[in-house]
Length: 238
Ligand code: ADP
Image (cartoon, rainbow, N blue to C red; front, side, top):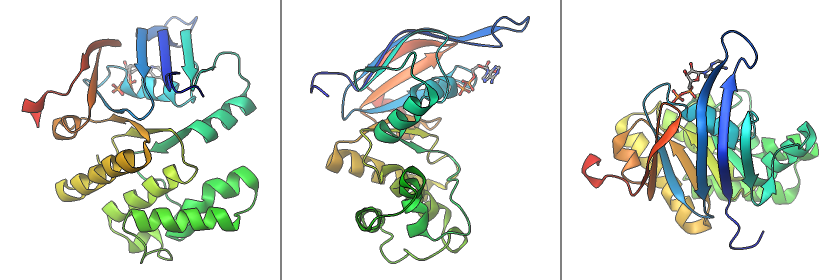
């Protein structure tokens, strides 16, 4: 990808649910959004404003009803499911509020799972990268522990390592600290910032927490399916 090509470029993106049915409803009304490589952006807005819908579109989990989406310069429209899956694997990492770790697998196995699913096997290089990432998130001593043996914050750090193991240029995080107490939440958020600074990974973080939004470099606010504000975070909120 050309250095100047935006990581994400949405133009006039609309999303309706229940198309063609009596209960059809448009929930995103023409979103224009450009995200550069290496940005660290908060996506905020009231409940029902369309944040999850937008994140699902960005994550190639749902198609827009209208408008265009280019991810790493590649137009997403018209790609079939296989092509979408490949693009998603190459370009995106996901962190959710609930970590979705597999309980029967160790931390290390959970982090190598994406490689297993993509290639049918875990290569030595995959395992090495997973070990390094778990060490980087402070879990070098917990490689062989299962999720039930880890605290909530530690489980979320395993999920972050898993989201990063294939070195995606963009991580989409939906309330990544929503399930954690304040101290763990601060630690997990600090880890995201650290990864961003060390690796240049871009983040789009959906959060309800004004303290966390204030610690991002850019804050985009959705209201009723439109971008109501886009700029520097409001420091007074922190
Ligand atoms: P947020 O994440 O900001 O709370 P959502 O993107 O979840 O907002 O929802 C935006 C609007 O879209 C809401 O009015 C919600 O009811 C509606 N919506 C979300 N998902 C669906 C769906 N699968 N089918 C129909 N309506 C939906």
